[in-house]
Image (cartoon, rainbow over all chains, first blue to last red; front, side, top):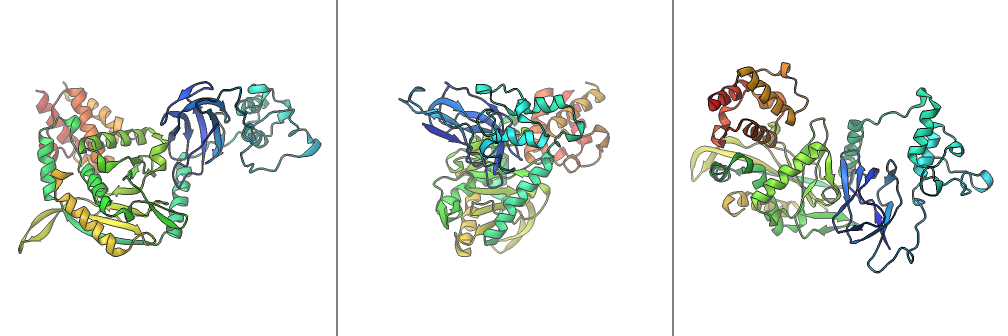
Length: 386
Length: 81
């Protein structure tokens, strides 16, 4: 029996609300398949399973808000059958933040009424007596929808639940993650002006021969250059967990994408170092489109090994970022600007971008950080090798 | 295509990327990307949208000429003739 738990969807998310199951008991699922849609303060996320199996029981109902790590469903492994599998207790793993239900002869926990903790809590909030609600769930269980239906029938407009303010929720989530970062991570900051003539000329030439639908952006070259530089500096890549840096084998780069309505998300493009610029451009286009549409995958949210932010678009010369825990570094790019530049003893004009590194001093030192930025600069001088 | 009609297509395309845009708030003589907060990905998608709706080619070398809404309208009008 496999327990399918709500995965962590980033440092700033500790709970999610199940919107929809995309599978039913009896369905076979493949590794990486999206099985549920969970709403977070940032986006509706397609939650993927990481093993093969057959869906046995769905333990959470749409509408319930559950903490990360909650068992959402059980899956049968190959060889298991529904007859031999043990049924999981229904949603009893949920912590109950409200007052504890009366134990003993009080009735509500006696098993006469089956009701999920979320539905019970909601009933308390709405002032609905659960004993009076007809249950439409399995074995007559009272569902969240039943509670809402009963509350609607009571018609008490003064007690309707407030509509959650999405923007305020996101602000709170960002505040929590960034406060944790600044509390726990001893940041150090470095910056380096990177000449961009070769990269911009190479890009102009490459794009001249392409239809508009397959043109590349300079951001894609920057992402690939970061990934290649990371291969030589693994201490900038991965997570700081349990008191130690755990380097990551691949560069899954979180790309900071701002939302038009405010706030930002930094989901990952996977294996950036192994992908062609064309593939990265397609991935980036797709990611930005889905971020703006509010539709992401759980793997993108949970596993960025480093973040890249580009605030040059907003016209700033440089950005010094706040590391997104448990990552250990963040690379920032400012705007590409023409600047006076001395080369071979002669003063000329050069397109230049300021690349910056915010890194975790527990995982690396400034010396290595400086070498990393130099490697990044060198990568961008050979655009044809990106 | 009439100028009004062309303007409507351009604004509609812009709204697919920046839904908050109000036609009346846009100044035709000010840089569009400053007024609407478009990053390079948004800008590229805007041009791809115009390319697909109007069947015009927009070489990257011409991007520098497309600064204001007025520039974009003039450019497209010439291309469509």
